Length: 325
Image 1: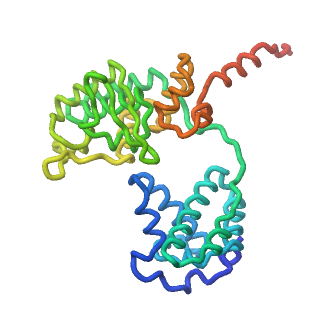
Image 2 (image 1 turned 30 degrees about the vertical axis):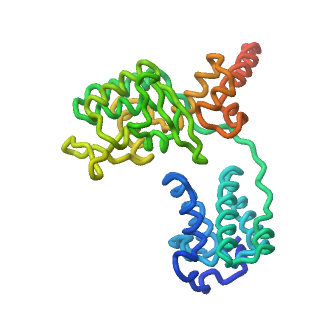
Image 3 (image 1 turned 135 degrees about the horizontal axis):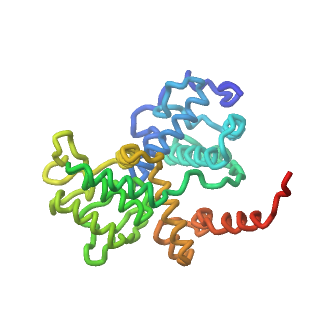
């Protein structure tokens, strides 16, 4: 399906919406609560704009979103499915599309009836197993040892980040956004502002807290981010008198670096989150408590990471005996 077949409008020929304050693309992204969310949804809208225009170099900024109608959005949905995108991936793009059209309506660029019809798209029904892998104790231990062998400030910081990932199951963006003021040493707790601007408390194990204290001895008690960038000279990066924050990508990069140094297979920060959930459920922790700790909106999302059904299925199959030839 070509871009012309998808849109049915001359997407490239329409002039950009006048002024950034009238751009639904920018209005939607500005409404999101975190840099990670803005990066993710910007990518979705840019890919949609590229599908509609047939030009892989364009972005969604300044595009005539207000011209899209139901016949266009329904064809766009079909085009994404035809490209082999997973149901969850298509639904994420549809969510971004609905939100940018809502901003077009809010900016009086689109009639309410046109907006409602264009957004009346059913989600793609699909069920997928969570992607990723478990982080075993050997891999984590080797990565921590690689950090310990690094006597620079980065060694102490990276060990504390790895320990926090494993002990809290936090998303990489949540680790990056942690502040010193959010850490309660006595309770070994950290206040997190997660998706949907929802606050929760996560807790460090005693061993993880000890790793964090070693980093704190290097970091000091100055205000700002709990984990900060470090330059090649070993100096902590500051913005004014506050320690600067890291990005979610920087958290992923330091994890990859330490695992490679340790000769271990690569893992993502989400693998640590998956492992955290699985370990808690294996230990008999209540599903609702686990859901609360990881900040899932629905217990069904948390249950997808439960390793016990797969283990029972494997044990059931192991009762079968293949006849010898």
